[in-house]
Picture 1: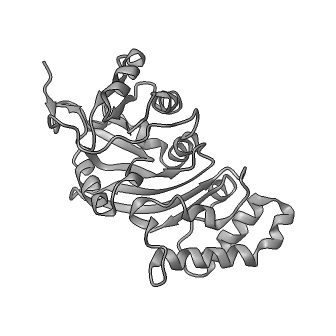
Picture 2: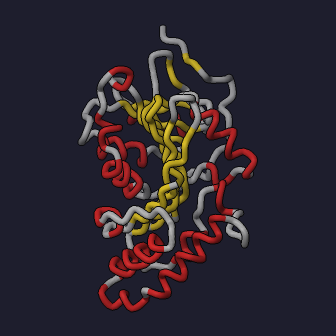
Picture 3: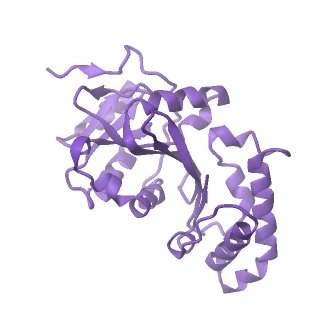
Length: 271
């Protein structure tokens, strides 16, 4: 029998509201597929059986199952673990489990087995309900399970996933996380208003949009850039979004200006 590791009798964390919608996290998955498909496809060394973990999938497993379908296009054998802190949600998901798709009770202390490692964690609409003081300990706990070079994408979306903001963190060789980027995503269905992104910032930033803070300065610069390029709206919202990003980059912010990102509604602020 395989023993569970890194798991206490009580999962660490709090239940989320659990509400979700079909394809709410599609743009998150599509971002990862475009950003680093090799992370999902790797089968060398310790990566061969390494998991994608969907942490806090909600009252039903639809986001986990949707991700399985998307990610297995690049790795048909990718193992996927949905983790929930609510036993009823785990029980509801178990009928959808198979030899590559698992659902287990757990929290920030991920319920891995002895032979399991993690290549990617997605934690969306999870940490926003916590106090800011809990943010760093949660990150530290999750770092224990991820292979060096692995990623965690952690953030918040609106109810239908049409806009979201997320930290992208890389697991370093010394066991720590390095924040690689702050990502803002829109499918343009709600137009383009910089202020909308402030309301869905990750937990470590949401309370810091105040004068003197870097995130405040960033948003002020982005708002000015959007105002200065408002004439680009005549050519479409995507063009306006891209034009504002160009101005923002010209003012010293490390914005990824590749068309493949901006044209699809992803603004990547490299950190």
